[in-house]
Amino acid sequence: MNAYQERIDIDGNNIYMDSDFLISSGTENIQNTWMDAKIGDFVVTPRNGKAVEINSLWYNALKIMEEITILTRGKEEAKRYADLAKKCKKSFNEKFYNKRRKCLYDVLGDSKIRPNQLFALSLSYPVIDANSNEAKEILNTVEKKLLTDYGLRTLAKGEEGYKEKYEGDMIKRDMSYHQGVIWPWLLGLYYDTLRNMIKQEKNKKTKKELEDKLLDFKAKTRKVFWNEMVNGASIGNICELYDTDNKKCRPQGTYAQAWSIAEVFRIIL
Image (cartoon, rainbow, N blue to C red):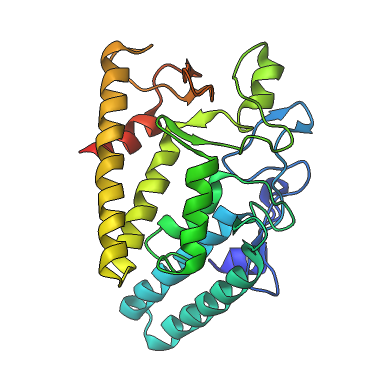
């Protein structure tokens, strides 16, 4: 935690806490997020700077450290982490919400609609209050632009660079890897977002609507992936990726992906 605050530059990762208490990481040639496709020196999805999921995880980590230090180092150290978390959350809410598109910036300065914004709502300590109007607008945008039965699109249709299919040679496949094609594991972020919103919602009617939505989502996920494991491309497994064609989300990538399986089973069991 101290290294992130003071700067750590192993292998050129360039990670540091800026004066606004947000984490900046990477360079134009170094990627530190899961969207890390690279062809030689060409970075397909440059996300250096202040990425939404990195800072959501940073806030979550600060809150966890606040809890840990109460038990291990005393109230004074815990207060330091609580203060950092409060300042981080303030900056995040001021800078990441995109009022025009009613969602979060993927990286500060990049308004493409991607699923990474759900980290801000799905963690143990959501950096965006899960019962806020902003949270409802973010969820609505994700549902309209990214959510499918097989997972979340990695980029909204119509955005620059959007690719509908994962096909062709290695270069063409890498160019589409995080540019639209569906990843099943991202359903876990959506699932946890709904659970956090239900937990924080005070309005009984809205809470019931969210609970019904969660039940429908779990049932649909169970139906889709049970069929996929019995009749799909890889018997007993779930693939890494799916094309975004609405008529047929064709399985792609590796035929058995651990985090696809883990997140789907976490949802349906």
